[in-house]
Image (cartoon, rainbow over the protein chains, first blue to last red):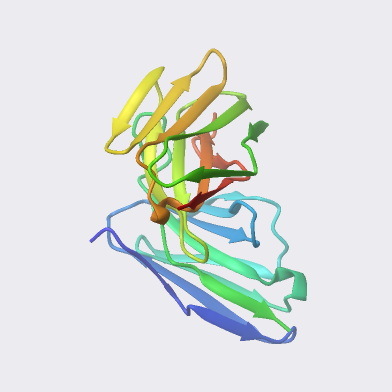
Length: 116
Length: 109
């Protein structure tokens, strides 16, 4: 199984809503990532979990809250978002970050988020 | 920090060869990836280079020169389905890849 799954595929939420994005992989990868991607822009790194611990937070606003319940699951909790947070949110996984292996990232299909 | 530069857009004809360049400046270097991303879809892995030279994989090849901070992705026998964005990503000292802005390739008949 070389698939990363993400739910939901589409999400529309108001600025006062609380919602969660979910990501799952069963490749035994120990690194998981959240990216935000705006149209015609590259993926922008938000968070990295390595061995279920948050290792990188790229100065993301606290209205985005990541969670890694176990080595296969990654959540992104959303609260009080702004319209400018509308984007495609991509989850990815890889072997743990290392210079010794290729550890290419496998991306999920993304969640298209619209904040009204 | 890292600085990665790619052309914004390229066009080519079906059946032709196209070369997409990527130049980078990074503190520490642990490899360079190329990903393909079709509109509205997730990026998919194409190639990885960590040593100088050419890596060939079917119609796609990728080249790296570490001393010049330069890579290219070569696509041969272009097909319409190759129309996509091609992302160069550099793995620096943190071992986390940083993506360039991507090159949008348009293949026309």
